[in-house]
Image (cartoon, rainbow, N blue to C red):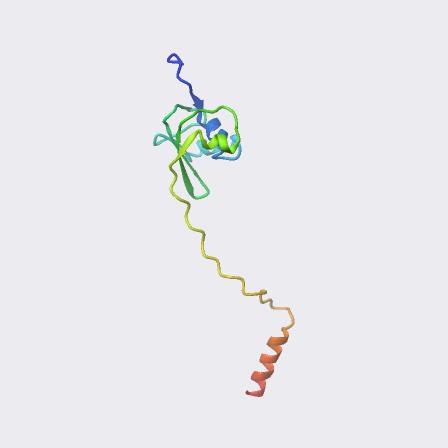
Length: 126
């Protein structure tokens, strides 16, 4: 760069700050259109500068990060968290799951003792 301003590839940066697990997945996400820089689709080799807004869509959630520091290699989670401002919306609440009520009913199993007593009570009419 003629201006001397530092830049980094978008796929390398989102991998370096741990928004994706591997650099290959970062490049794949860019090619699939899941990464946007300043509102525009980003190719893997697109350059990033400080202050750029990066949006990464994955697992049904969008992560929004504003670049504060550029990286070219993967770093620890504590250092990575200092390299961007996270403006992501909160994750959606987990889906409500029915509580486990015991064992599953299977067609080819023997009745439990409780079920045998209930059957006997129903047959006797009382």
